[in-house]
Image (cartoon, rainbow, N blue to C red; front, side):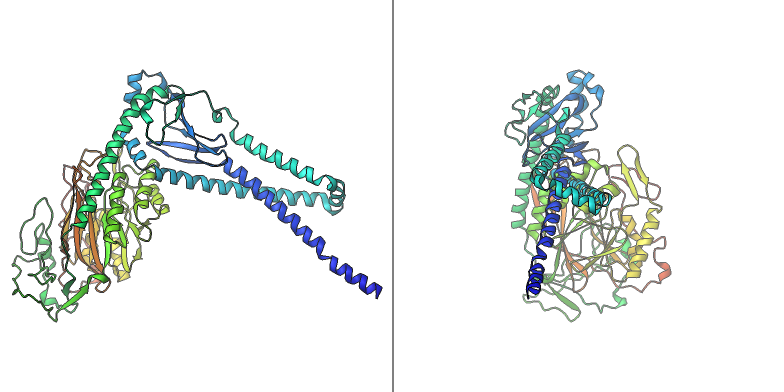
Length: 631
C-alpha cells in the first residue's frame, strides 16, 4: 500500500513540473513579443507623400513630429502619439542649392507648389491615414521578423548547449533568475530606444516659435529651425490664405448642394417602360439611330453640345420609346388617371438601385465632401467613377484617391475604370483604399454586372500622351466587346474614353456605356444597339486651368437609377455646381430605350466601322491618330 500510495502521490505531483514548463515558455514568448513589438514600432519607416513632395517617414521616441526640409530647416510640433512616440518626415525633393538663393528667389522657386499644398492640407486626414497604414505594416513586419529571429536564436542555443549543459546552467543561475530577467529587459529595451532615436537628427534643437501665420490652425504652436522660419512667414501666408478660401468655397457649395437636393423637382412614383416583347418591326436601323447625333428623339437640336433625352409621353409618366428617327413622337390623349397599356411594364421606384456617377476629378479633393453629401442624400448603393482621379499618376497623389475613397459612405460600393491621367500605381492605391478597380473582367455590384478596364493611353505633364499597353483604342474596344458577348449578362460598360466602348455598343452585348474623358456631358444617347452617357468633369476641369482651389468651371455629378427587373437604367438627373458655389439638381429624365434590331452574328462583334456620335474634346485638345483625346 505504501508503494502504491507513494506512486499515486508521485503521479499527482507529476503535472506540476509540466505546468511550470509551459508557464516558463509562455513567459518567454510574452517577453519576446513585447521586445519585438517595441523594436518594430520604434524603428518603423515608410515612404509617403507630404504635399507635392515624396518624404521618408520614421518613427522616433522623442515625442515630437518633425518635418525635415533639408537645407531650409525643420518644422517641429508636439506629437499626438502616446508613450513618447514621434514621427520624423524627411522631405527628399528639396534641392541643396535652394539655400544659396536669395529670399525672393526661394519664394519664387517654391510658389509653384502652393496649389499642391492647398490640396494636401484640404484633406490631411487621407495623407495621415496612408502614412499610418504604411507605418503599421512596416512595424508589423519588423515585429514578426524580430520575434522569429529571437525564437530561432533561443532554439539554436538550446541545441548547441545540449540537455546536460542546460541543466548545469539552469541549476547555477536559478538563484539569480529574477535579477537576470530584469537586467535583460532593461538592456534590450534601452538598446531599442537608443538605436531608434538618439541620433542627432532626432534630438530637439533650439528653435524659435513660428510667427502668427499658423494661429488658429492645426500647426499652432509649431517650432521652426533654420531658414524655414523666414520662408514660412511669407510663403505660409499664401498657402493658408488659399486654404481658407478653398475651405470656405466648398463648405458653401456643399450647403448649396444640400439645399438644392431638398428642393429638387418631384419624380414620378413609377416609370413605365416598353415590355421585353417589343418586336423588331418597331426598331430603327443602327445607322438611323446613330444619325440622330446631338438631338433628341424628335430631332430637336440641343445646346452646349449635349443631347436631350426623350421626354415622358404626355403626363402619364411613361418612358417614351426612342426610335432615333426624325418622326415626331405622337402626343397621347391626356388622362387624369392613366392606365399602362399591356405593352408596358411598371417599375416601382422602391425597387430601383440608385447610382452616382463622377468623373475626371483630377485630384480636386475639395469636391470630396460634395460627393459624400450627394451619395448620402440620394441613398445611392453604388458610385461609378469614370476615371482620371489624379493629374499625373504619381505616388504623391495617393492622398487624392484615398480622399475620394474615404468620401464614400460605409456600405456603398465604389467602382472605377482608370483613365489616361491615372496609373497602375495610383489605381493600386485606390484599390487599397477600398475601390473596386476594373481590369478587363466583369464584377457584380448591387446585382449590376459591370465590365471595364484601364485606359490604353497615359497622359503625363512632361511626356504627353503615349500608348502604354499592347492594344490601340480599337483593339481594346474589340476585346471588351468579346468579353461582354462571351459573358452574355453584362449590364454596363464603364470605360474612361468613350470611343473604347464603340465595338461593344455595336455588338449588342452591352446595353449601356458610361464614360468621361471629354470634360463635357453628352446626355444618354442611343448609339447602335446601346445607350452611351458621357459624364462631364466632377472637378470643373477647364483646359489650361488647374483643378485646385475654387472651381474654374461647372462641376457635375449624375444620379441614375437602375432596375434589377429589366437590367436597364430607368432615369437620370444632373447635379451641378458652378464657379460661384451655387448648386442645382435637375429633374429626373427618362433613360432612352434601345430599339430591338436583328441579332448580329459573332463575326461582326468588334468589327470596324459603325456609328460613333462622340465628338472630339473641346478647347483644341490634341487628337491622337486613332481619334483619342487627352483633356
